[in-house]
Image (cartoon, rainbow, N blue to C red; front, side, top):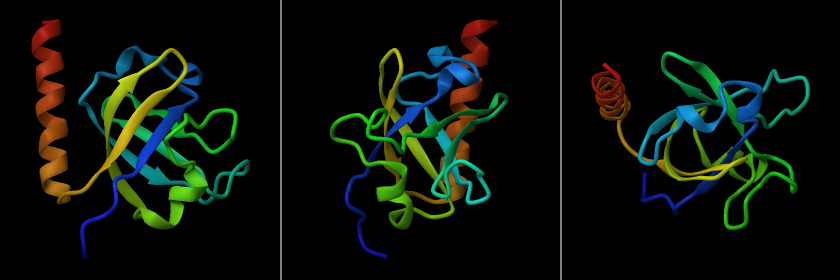
Length: 122
């Protein structure tokens, strides 16, 4: 598989879960397509270990930040499960970049970031 063009996405809907306080610039997050979603067949949920679902990839012209793709535009360019890295945190939106890499490497990075959070909060 060749090098994928950079894909930037917007996370929205955080206020329905834990707000944007659970996100940190540089964090690696899990994403999973949710074709069974009754409101949006192209829904992509964003998951953070310990918390679970923390938002969705934006799929409306009103929620997609300029310079990012909607969930619908990205849907065929990403796998069923994939990873993103937080680039910017705004009040109602989180801007992220799709990360390439082996699952083992991504999960190892997630484990390290969870340990760092645990260490700083202890």
